[in-house]
Length: 168
Length: 297
Image (tube, rainbow over all chains, first blue to last red; front, side, top):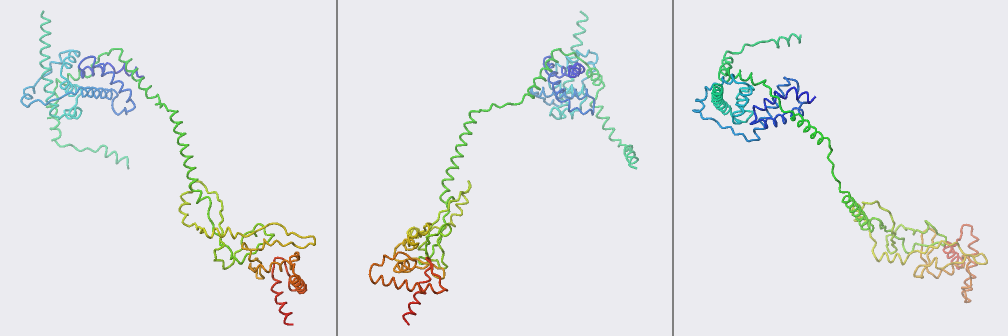
């Protein structure tokens, strides 16, 4: 039963772990730790929502805990700087393959990466992110804006590099 | 009715104010970008196959944790130390019990009882007294404690009664030393031997049985039942009256008196209302009256 559960959800959860971790080794540690938690807390699942959603939440919480252990520091971005990056458009990411997107996200610093994942991918609000990471709502917003700005630059850089490689 | 009530409540609708929707729309416009949603859709369900060893690691970790949980915690008991401790506790307990018993024995195991003795002039021992009769008789006005005696009655007390006995120690009456010594000195003589008869069948009088310790008096029982001291001079007469040996009258005068006594005794015995006995000196008093009557004649 455990193996069946693993085979069913491991690829999706490994993707989650790859988004929150610095590298694949950390992602594997997170995956292992997350599945152990799932097996140990299976009796707590009350079938009030989807099972996948419950497992995903376990993995996200496990990842955030992992970041806390690494003593992630989230600093508020200044108002002036925030206005500059407010209108960053990351729609270009949609043109990239999933694997490439995940690699770009992984290159972000832990704070930016976590807020970006929680807000953009998981659909958390800034208030919920603030509660999860024990930061203010404003800090969550500024961290997201900063993350988007960095990603925009990275996407632009990536696309130009890809163009160059094609033209060669 | 309840069904219709719950149905009404469940389907009751209140249109929210317009402001609520405006707030929601503003927040959506601010927070959710179309581009973000597209990326979320793309990444949310993306799957990456993990390395195969992770499953083995997870299962082995779970097995290890379950085995740790199932293994009961065992404590290595230091049996040698426990045995030594048990012996030490046992010895301490036994010693304490022994000491407590030995300390409490003078007050708890032997209770002192002061028995007020009878008046010195009120006791007559009987040669045939045994058992209960060996107990000294008590006179009604026996407040004189010259003959007090001390009896020690051994009563086995249960263990752990030391404290109770200590509390009751104030109630114990102790006899004074002088009274105790006098009680020993004046201890009544009680011989449980049968009367001794001579060849003629007469009772041989043992003087020591009726003599007081100082040998100045003999103790007899008077007609009213009280024990009375009388002069030792009457001893020989009593002996004669009881049919004892007559060789004690060596002089002529004594012999005469013996004869007289025998004569009076004969007269006394003829009286139906008087029954002389060896232990009852009733006849002496009547004999006196009889002598006086004779003299008057």
